[in-house]
Length: 270
Image (cartoon, rainbow, N blue to C red; front, side, top):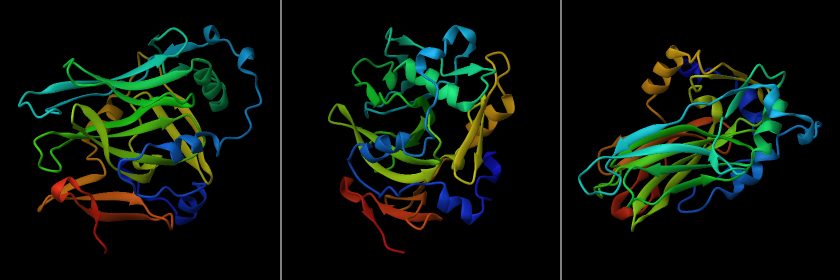
């Protein structure tokens, strides 16, 4: 799992993505949202033909992090929320013993899910992640610490898309002027992240083949440890700089140094 994420043939890296996502600053994830279904096979079964009460719901992992995100010198708590758009209540992400991954995608789309992050400090605005139907919430959330020296902790997140692609985007967010702003984003593969405690994603030549789901009572403690120990793909360096590990335009694993001086992002040439 997380310990062998880089031992993947180059042939797989090339074919697993339908297009490349550029580095960008301060823009929404329009390209990735539009890509959510591009690598999906035709969904043959009508949503009306699958009943949710036929399968045992699995709540799914919820991320929770702490840090000083507004710079007031006190720690706040950020919690992932995964709601159904049908009843506007917290809902389950997965189902136990589904015959195939396609049915999981259909059941997910039926619920019209949306994902957001709330703080226990009511003065901190909600971070709205996505309301696209083909998503299982977050696959990663981390407090990165104060990356740019402005006194607030930045966070990173990755969306867990309900598609067949292994392409994804890593976002770095900062809380500035009483709202969340995208600080920087870069393209990655899903397999660069550790699996969530109750899921195992199986990747093939063209991307995701299947997602094996456990149960609420059998959370993989070993997987929880790997998730907790995962250092992420952002490294803070001296001189107000960071190094990120990403997927480059040649579909190869790469890294780049980002200069964050004066709250501006400058990508340094190699």
